[in-house]
Image 1 (cartoon, rainbow over the protein chains, first blue to last red):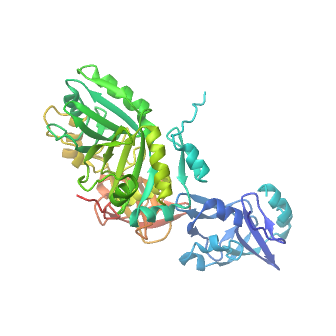
Image 2: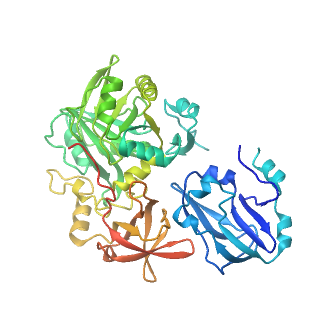
Length: 126
Length: 365
């Protein structure tokens, strides 16, 4: 049974956004990290890079395979989680605590197109 | 029409043990039981067991069996003692690879070939076609034999403790027949992990029993996931990636297994000799990245702006904590120490040409 947190926004490709004011913290869900297995590398954008809703902005890699990261929202990267550079396995320890990028949201109405916790829970069949 | 997926005799066991299963070479095979890193490390530091029953076995007998096998096989088995195992390839006349395989010398004019699961139908057809000019009998026994690979530094002890089979007399790349549970089984000191270890060929009934005994003894079951990371670190090729109908053993820098001067030659010999003399256009190399980004199969290799090749296999090493790859590149840029780069998604990362053997194997010679 995967952990799901109330109050976050979820995408069909298993990313989440935790909104704080003008900013959104983007990461992958607990379900996604479990499906992926041990994370050995996180390919992250750089600060000031633009991300676009529905487009790839990096990748999370297990030993076996690379999995694209798709941004649930559009905006400008204001921070990347540098701890993941040295210890990508943090995502397996707590995927919600260990967000990947912090974005200044350019269009908060995009959040309405994402799922809430209950809808995401239904989607992954739990 | 979709071909029905095959299963090994241990399939039910894998599923019951909760292994992650995936189709491989026409078989539904376990990729991992717990996680690749744990299974990989069990083999490097202790012992692990793989179900490799999907591998193919072809028995070749008859008055000209040795002469025939030597003609279709790149290594030289002429006059070898019974009990010896050889690694080599079968080639097309142009030097492209039909398959890489093991040849076991069971007796005079009695050879046992172990081939890749994905290539069984193709190989058997190829062997039978070549056999028409020889007095030999070709018997595809792939459905008769199941196979376990017991790999790791504790392999010899495991064979003794769990099965009572003393393997201390076997050196690397030799085998013996053992009477086990009323059946004559084949035990060889071979493997595909860069560690000491054994491969056992027997009927499914025996293999299932042996698997259960290994599980009861607490031996780590290992999936194809770590089989690939282990063989990769040890510099061993995988047919389909490093050897193909387009990639000759000379290009794959496996020329030491091609005995160009052996009596009678072999199919593909002249093409190999020419590639060796003139230098093949492409060459397989090792690449090491300074960054942590991981090169994967198919990614482009660049020399400045120019695409000079592609990645055949790449990983973040487990025993070697580096991002590493095999790549097929233009020979001109393949010298050790040469600086190239790899395109990984949107970015380009510097990569240095290094030796393909990233991890030093621990074989019992």
